[in-house]
Length: 89
Image (tube, rainbow, N blue to C red):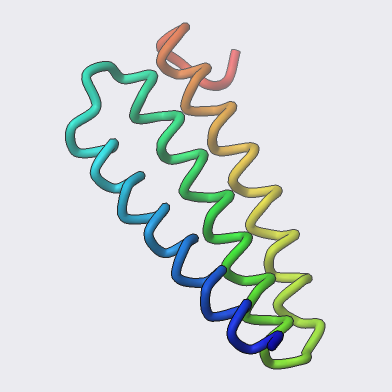
């Protein structure tokens, strides 16, 4: 039963990644594209965690934490670049 639910969840998050990719390519505004990139990072984190559950190892959880930190910093830096024109003051 857990295997079927894992495959269903992986399929849902993969579909979410495709929808985010569509939003990045067709986004009417730059803010929509930034939010789609941030949501893609969240979906990749979820996929890594699900894969770690499927394989039964802890290394994927650590990788997801690293991607979460990098994703947060990159989103903040990109928003700051859009608002001010530079990242470092």
